[in-house]
Length: 564
Image (cartoon, rainbow, N blue to C red; front, side, top):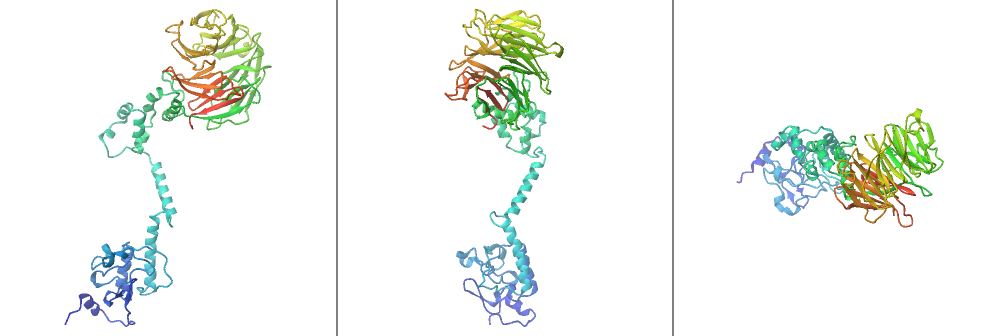
């Protein structure tokens, strides 16, 4: 006689209970299950149900056809009806053998319950509800782990909160890593100061602490001083302390490569000869006989369309003006000089020359003016002495440009060069006597249209001879230190410098703006701003570390290097 298996013996030793006669289990593939393989949902005791619920709650993968469990208890039905097993092609190996329910149990793709099938492994409503709750919790965990199904929004929101919390945490020095990071920050700054732009950028991608560390202004000052228009003068003075040096170096690469976006800020119906100045977040530009003040928008690339101040008083066009000591000093075609206070309605004008006043400059409470009547004059800015001429200088030629030295001891005049003398001459500001003249090889008609001091001993000039010249009074007054020639032999109407390496010039044809690197002879980039029918000179240039502004006959252009 064959002895029954241990599982059946254990089942026979259990207390007898009166239940309906069991019927054979039919799997999802039509196989009959033996009575000994009935799972806990086929009439087993409460202990079996609790064990089964514990398995589901722990997230075991036995949601498909589970094999016979330990202790002689089977797994019951093959999952919920309507769910297809994940291992159909696995054959008998898909069913777990004894003692391997957690390893070999097949995973199940969960889907909607079929209305034509019934759960044969359910022992009662209570067990079904408890098991359904566990399955729902497991399903929710699975949904949150994948995108495109319910639970994704919750997972994404949680991930966003974690990212925001990580960004808000202060960047701390890495606890583990190379011994280099254990050095004091002063030594790390010294070591990293020898890196170039590319190396610093790569180092900043290592971790948040290094990203913060490599953003230090001290690391970028050396690079910024060698870059174009980064806000540093040749002597190392920082003119833009409110902007991080790293950001300025990034924008300076656009200046070097000529990457910019062109736009138009203002337009006029009739031709003008505008002049402009920048102050803080305001633009002052002359139109006909008035000076209009516009406010920049926060991006610096656009203007409020309505001017917030209008300074009038001249009978003819404004030829030139400067901002000094909270005043606007303007020179008009009517031969008069106008003085306007920036923050009030005070305006006064007085007759200064017999003909139009072409140029004017003001520093340290002193005004100098040059006119077509071949004279230059010195005036005080003090309110009680306005209109009282201190010196009248006979230049013997029309004066096109004028500038006061930063030391307030002298001033330079640029004339039309119609005689045999040099168009650039330096005069004593206190006595009005001639100190010296610059250059000796100017051809006749090589008038100087713009001149500016860069330091007390260096200055720049440009004009009709198509050259930009750089003068250093400490070396020689007979020959310039360096010169740059306009490639198309166009007259240069104006120039502007960043005080270091960048030089910008405005040509007489097609509104061409040229950028020069003063460390090389050739032009760096050229930007034509007008077409053939509307050819116009560039009358005035101004720029910041992010934008360049060019005033032409019919419009005001902008080159945006921050957002090319």
